[in-house]
Length: 373
Image (cartoon, rainbow, N blue to C red):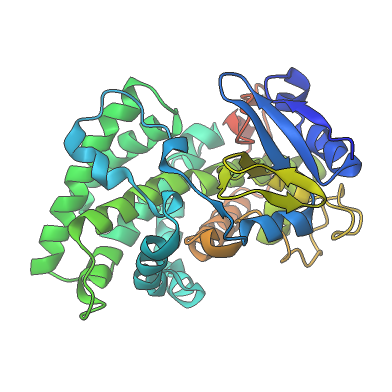
């Protein structure tokens, strides 16, 4: 079988990953993805094969594939090993203990607490929806969800901006503050329980307590994952205003303009044959969610954004043991944000200077000026 090749540094791939990975998917179920400085990875392109690989225990994550920016004091490093870097018994145990805090029911119960957070940001009539709305929103929601005291939340917005900017001095400088503030919140909630995640995790699971390190690492996981709804919201607004659509279908938005293009690489624990192609032990394998979510074998007219579509089969939140823990919360947050935005500003339209930064792993806007807000 001829295997197509994709150059991750090619401007055509960076500027239109939907077409680039879609062409590879139409040729073969796997391709070779060449990444400067990282060699070649296998990339799975078709929906059914993506789901099969993500659920296959013969492929495992590796902490070595999760980069640590320089400048982080050693004592904070243990908090940075998140669920995304765990496999096997460690992952199953921690996931089992924290999953009750992230059910769809709990996300729905949290909805009324997201509305005033969204409205407070909209009260300032945002001019750039990246800078003034979507970027600060996830950190404000996380603070409310976790139990960060109100007086600390302006500082957490600064942390969020540093994390959103990516690896660099600001990223490394934000981490100690996030960890220290979370530890302080845990200490406070032991004395003063409330209706928040910190209290829930402290009080739950009496027979098998989470350690403070595990709770802090979970909050760090949420901080990183919070970039998904931030980017989804702005991708959605650009798409909906361009197509003059106001109805909201979060799953179709995740299918059509999900910010996450690729999954974290897995590594073959042994020689594995996948769709007739031999994957050697130790080979890195990622999945192209950007291609799987537009697979014509699964979705009718996949290149059309259809707000009436039942798109629950998408893999925008992943699949298998590492399906996004906060998917239900992200859905509710996105739905509330878009609903209130278009209710408050029914004449909203795109402004001049929309900017999208080429990023091989994330489909994201860096500026979304609007008028009519």
